[in-house]
Length: 87
Image 1: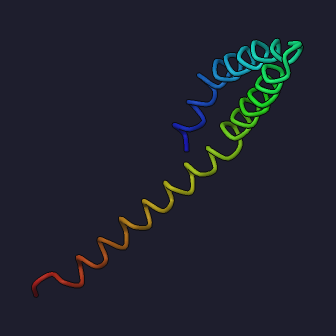
Image 2 (image 1 turned 120 degrees about the vertical axis):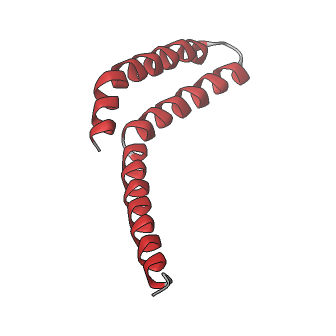
Image 3 (image 1 turned 135 degrees about the vertical axis):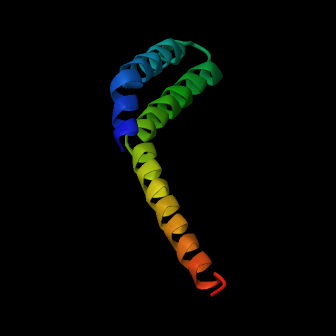
């Protein structure tokens, strides 16, 4: 948990800045007179915005849940090993 907070504090700004730079770059395609290029710009901008939102909202929650699951599985494994120790 502490490592996650440290990572968000140290590189969160860089990830957000690079993502927004990508969004602004692809948003230039939206004003293209060619429909396919304009559509590509719109879809790409939406995809990058969605990816950024998931990076800062869903991904940390998944990491915490997976860490809790790992700890639970390790404890269960130790319990099972204790059941089969020779007496």
